[in-house]
Image (cartoon, chains in turn cyan, yellow):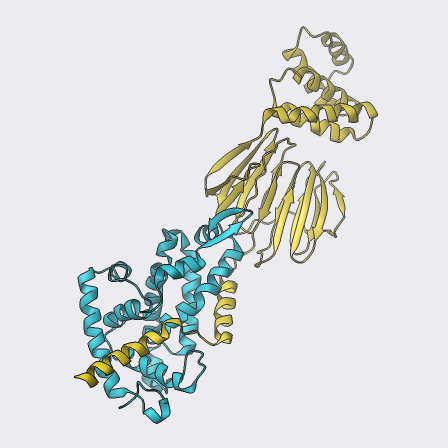
Length: 205
Length: 289
């Protein structure tokens, strides 16, 4: 399982101000620039990761993550609670990514997709191959399935949390994740990296 | 079947391995810096009204980004730490770093800090208005009086310190106010709140004013203390004393109109006082032109 969303919230949900315990969300709503900077720093990597996994290239994902943060700062009043912050940010991210892909369609149409670039920091070269393989497999999934799979398998959401985030019934989430896993595995089997390049036991057998 | 299962688990393991994937540090820095820059509001202005005062309540206010209000004058002085500015007949404008301050006539302002990360001012008398440039993280703009600390980080609101109470009214944005007991309350746009102190705490104002008055020094300060005392306790048993001495002060300062007003108020409120006759005589001799 991936990181539990609640642990993410606990990591960044509170700030002490003058001996008072004020949540980070409250401080942001109050316009505290230090709180905003902290929120931006804590969430930027997550938003970038989501943008990448939802199909953007690194430069696009940077723009998207920045856009999500700016939108969040303008609409923070609509985030009802600290516990909802992660799912609220994901909802914004999926819309921003969707818009970004739509607006860049002509570029892809003219220039093509181009070779995939590594998006994350890695300590080993094999990790780069694995990252590219994962992204390639995700990109072949229907968007709705990919979102459900990312939330539950990467971000560690429960089915109910994913359902609330995506605005669909929990049963539908389960169905999408099941289909997504199946498709992802099939893609993985077809597209898995050459083991010598990847240097990993999970490669071609 | 076993190979399929292995592939299945391997594929999910690979997917989950990205749960903590991070962008290159340079990319992360660009995202944060870009977002912070784009979040920056336009010019902001704070109008702070300090009308005398007297309170134990302390309101520490944090305020969020807002559009601009232009001060009527360009800065004519660049303030440095330690400067004191006395308002002249016309409003006195000065620059504190990138921020602008307008000290109204009769107002007095002391610059406690004028540094890149900290602008801290004390309004010692009268009213001052502030136009605060957008602050970046780590920068603070603070205005103090004896009763109130206002910490600005953006938005538009007003603070009025009068007597033992301080009133905070938010026009735009949102503020966090902290009273003298450390209790915090958030106020949104259109909301207001009064913070009042223990009424017994104002007795010292009268004592201090009378000491200054007897020494014949800092008469304006003494007048301010008396005004604060009266505003905080309009029905106090010592109001007669405070009103009478305030009248004397205004008369000594040559502020005849104000003195006449105070004398009239005294006669209305305390017609049986043994001071009433003297005040009546003074009014007769100093009738309005």
